[in-house]
Amino acid sequence: MGPRKNSQSGNGNGDNEYLSRRARNNEAVKRSREKARQRAQETHTRVTKLKTENEMLEERIKLLSKELTFLKDIFMAHAGSSHGLCLDDLDIKNLLNDDEDDQFNNDKKDQMSSNYSETSNQSQSGGLS
Image (cartoon, rainbow, N blue to C red; front, side, top):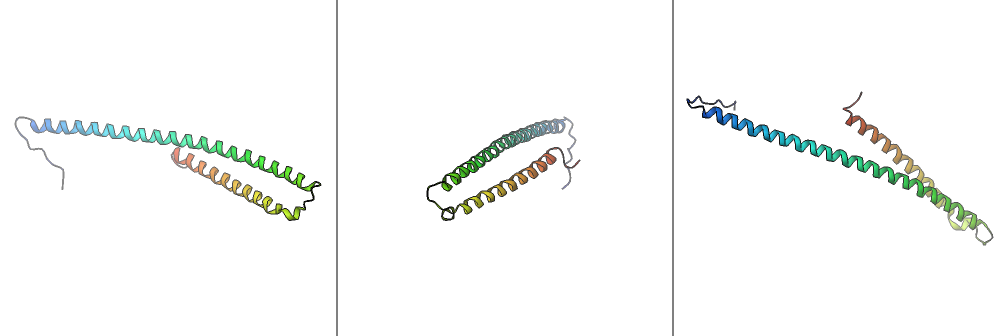
C-alpha cells in the first residue's frame, strides 16, 4: 500500500492534521532516542563497574594464590621436620599438582580476559582501525 495522499479541502483541516501528526511523531522519536541514549549510558556504566570488580577479584585471586603457596611451604617445612611423618604418606604431590593446575587455569582466564578486553575496546571504538 502506497503513501496516503491528503485530500485537498478548502478549509485546511488536512494540513493541520498532518502537521499535528508530524509534531507528535517528532516528539515520539525524541523520546525513543533519549531512552536509547539512556540505556547505552547505563550499559556503559555497568560494564565499567563490572570491569573494576573483575580486576579487584583477579587481584584477590593472586593474593590468595600467594598465600596458599606460602602456607604450603610452611606445611612442607613442618611436615618434613621431626614429626615422624613421611611425605609419601601425605599425598602432598596431588595437592601441589592441583596448585599447578590452578595456576594454569588462572593464566588461561587472564588470557581470555585480555582477549575479551581487546575485542570490547575495538567494538566500542567503532571496529577495526
